[in-house]
Structure formats: C-alpha cells, structure tokens
Length: 109
Length: 113
Image (tube, rainbow over all chains, first blue to last red; front, side):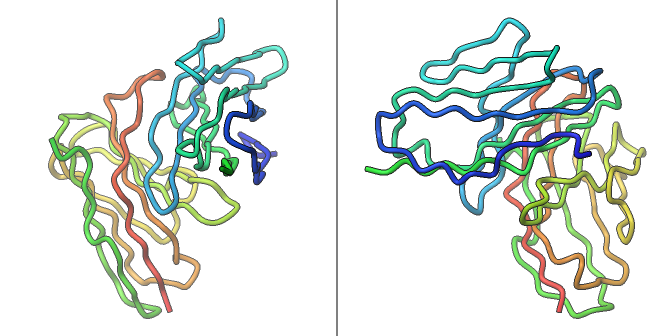
C-alpha cells in the first residue's frame, strides 16, 4: 500500500467554483501534513501546512482527520491562476516526506 | 538569496555514461534531499543528508551515490546511467524537523538513451 494516495484527477472546474481534493495516508504515526502546489514543469512549493484543528488561508482550507487518516484541501472561488497540480505530503516518524502523485486542477474561463 | 539551485537543467546521456548533478543552497539549511519525479509515481526520495559529511539512503537509492562535503552543496552521482533513470530530479533543503517546509530547486531533466 502506498504511503500517500490521492485522486489524480484531472479536475476541470469553471472560474468561481469550489473544488475539494482528498488524500489518505497509511501510517497512523505520521507527524505532520502539507499541501504543496506544483506548476507545469516547475518545482513543488509549499501551499499550506495542515493542522489538527483545520486551518484556512484566504480561499484555501485544509482539514485533517487523524481517525480516518484523511486530509483534504478546499479551494473556494477558483481563479485561473489556481490551475496546477496539488500534492498531498505526509511526514512520517522517519522524518522523511512522502508525496502523493498529485491531483491536477484546471480552472476554465 | 538564490535559494536552491541545480545544475545542469537538462542533460541527455547514453546508457553506461556517468554524470554528477550539483545542488547548492544559500539558506544555511542542515538537511538536503534528492528526489526523482516520474509520471504517475510522485516524488520519491533517493538519498538525503542531515548535515555536512553525512548521507543516508531514501526510498529508491539503487544506482545513485551522493556526497555532502560542504554544508551548502549536495551532489548526486550516476556511475553507469540506465534508461530507467530517465526522470526529473529535484533537490530540496530545510532545517529538519517535522514541521519545516522543504524548499526545492528548479529540477534537472535527465534523459538516458
């Protein structure tokens, strides 16, 4: 079983739409969780960390459910500039990060 | 601050050739990492270093060697390149710890024919 699994998409949504991505992880002892954004042919960059109580950064909301080993990312009022691949990332007790394969989002005018 | 830089950006090798990828960071980070990214596989850790003079194996270390002689540099070597090593290679660095962001370089696109 993969350490991190996420729906590869693609998700094609109109501007202004709300879209949600989900991710599951296999190691119940995982310590920390992140969403990274990767633009086409570019390096991944941190979008936001995911905290146990859930957290929001502008139009982006991240949630963590430790009991179900599940992480989510909600994007409200989608912009064209949100088009990218979103990587779910988990930090296991080994201290190393495990990356999901990414969910591709295209926001359509 | 340049952040994390990688050289070269692109390279084409023939099977059996060797090469070294260079990663440099100017953020005084202790930890450095080498990943490869393949379609449908996500990023996978090849080797990493928790400080100058140290290296450790990641998830997919076979066929690669690394060295961290200086804190700011992390080298990835391919002694005898194989077509299966065709990939995009990313270097990253951070201060370590479970909650610290990893900063990535722009990547090296390697093709092995």
